[in-house]
Image (cartoon, rainbow, N blue to C red):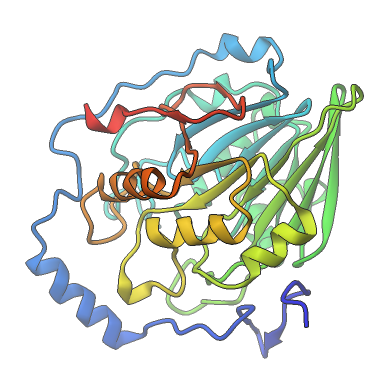
Length: 344
């Protein structure tokens, strides 16, 4: 029986594709005790950067028809076969419901939202604060760069976008296995929403009431050149990775989370070891791009630990990584690219 099917609900709450435990109040107290005893360098001791994006680069099309600008954590600009897609943009100073507390950015945005090039789509995987920044969405909704963009997201998240100023007519909410095609002058891209093993909610009282998704981006250019990217968003390890690759792969680039991980919540986050296993389940084709790290303190580990561990694993198992410097528009050429900016 296939694991790839539309989302199911129990009452008002969406269900994970496989049984998944999410800790309650007991977990909160356990994490609090660990936090009080924690001595890891969870926040960089020295300032990072500054990292800068040269917006003039976007005036020329991608040489390879697949160019990625990673802004830190899970925020990226994907230029795929003539289509520009901004993914999970968070320019907010904190991944938090308030501006005065919560995880603070390790470094400033690499360019202003006003300097973004014209966008064809803005993709929001789910409603957590480190993937959907209120200040960011409110600003983007007013900017010329986003004036023609489709806002593509998971079921239920559209209400949040509308509350933050995005017009209803520009929002497409997808159930798992549904898709939408974004067309641009130079090409098109089919975006497919697929299951992930995670959860949702912007407070403790509305968990699971909106959907969370991973996505396949399948580009098509008039020249016949095409690329396929898998954006894993947030997910724990499950057998669906293999089925997604069998149905939609192989992938030129597989973007998987490695940070904000701990054994206590291992069912809903991959971590570096889980990312490697998930990539292997997809067939280990193309390049593995680590995301969900390097910008916010959201766990108990040292801030460098996820990437250090992944590099070690990749060397052991012969996996090719694609890990650019924050803010640097970088062509995906099929060969490994590993910036060591985090070692400075």
